Image (cartoon, rainbow, N blue to C red; front, side):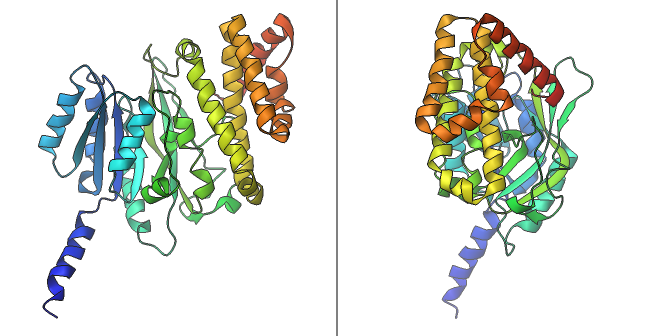
Amino acid sequence: MTDLIPALEKKHERKRIMKLLSITVPCYNSESYMKNCVESLLKGGEDVEIIIVDDGSKDSTAQIADEYVKEYPTIVKAVHKENGGHGSAVNAGIDNATGLFFKVVDSDDWVKESAYMKILETLRELAGGEKSLDMLISNFVYEKEGVKRKKIMRYHRTLPENKLFTWNDVKHFKKGQYILMHSVIFRTKLLKECNLRLPEHTFYVDNIFVFEPLPYVRNMYYLDVNFYRYYIGREDQSVNESVMISRIDQQILVNKLMIDFYVAHKQILVGNRKMGKYMFNYLEIITTISSILLIRSGTEENLEKKKELWKYIKNSDRLLHFRLRNGIMGNAMNLHGKVGRDISVASYKICQKFFNFN
């Protein structure tokens, strides 16, 4: 019996040091704003593992990360790597995560303390339950520079609240209402088991992050709290329209990878109607964004890229092409001539305003 004591002590020690939630903070030249992010995350205390990934920064990001490790050695990890882009930093976070659950918080964003406490309390209650929680969803707030009235992405009429549920319990998602990276916390093991790997040196991979794991998600939980604060305002920010047009090839790459994944998992999506419908609608809006940016750039080269994108969809799956091309968005994005393109842009702006697209 006494021989078992050391083994039991080691087992309990492993349980004691396992973190509830791993939070990855991808950083590239983030010295001017990352402290606000990390300080908000530190309020989670010892339940949380904060993984600061320095993605080859050239400013003092690395030193700031190491200072946090020195001050909070049981909470903060620093990963220093060559520059590989946002997706590469998220991959590094997943690789180094030891928590039961996993979240990404970008270095210019932050979290609301009261909602944070509620989320940690909920994760504690659900950890180790009879049913594994695969994905927790909460609200996020658009912290747009110069805007007093903040837009909140909520799911309170679409998802059941404060209980475990499956895709069968999900109601209709409105246009413009999507589960984005800011909304989700995944079970860490699920991300590893589904072999999620985001492409390197590519922006907009957050769309893949909230797309590819979905066929593996069984049990979900929704908390109607405004947890994540999504900052919009920097001129060099990736969601700035002019920046997106300058990086259009990366947007197209992400779009095509999502098309490939959708087609490869078509049979699974057919078997789960509500999940399949949601993933189709998400793919539709990503394709619409790609198309409208190519149109708005106004160059012949990008108009050819738009034709090539739609040809790629048709060659990948004719039924998918038919559904995308003949929907409201697809029709609006494929009108002919300059007048048609002007109508496409006007139609998109109306949809953007009406459906509250970002």
